[in-house]
Length: 162
Image 1: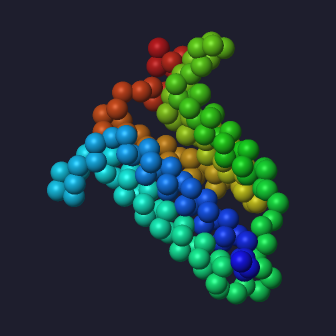
Image 2: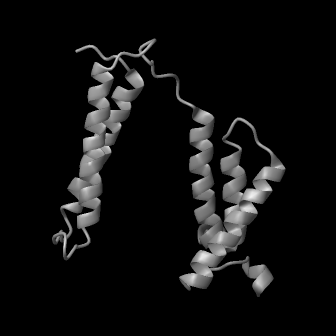
């Protein structure tokens, strides 16, 4: 077996493993059928489609010739760590962390922190662009989750709202 594109080959394997894991996890729920879908129907179908997509990508990696073998490069540690950190920071700021007596900072502060930390993972970080993006995301999230869906979680830090 000659792998013609390492990137596609390993991406396909990853898609297949995640798809199989989702399909397997969905089998613990009631599936139903197309007319009356149960809670496991959508994750099962999504997992199956993802596994099929992974199979197609893996097959192409074995058949379609690439210029230099499309080698897998080194891990991009900075983006990986900053994106994970941004998501953890979002959760901590949104809900607070009672173990260290950090109060909930609310949705707006959490979105601004998430946007700034995640933007730092890219190659070109611009404060003005990041501020515009964070503002649009904060307004959109407020409208979607607080106004339209009427979800109950803090929007602003407790020391501001009292």
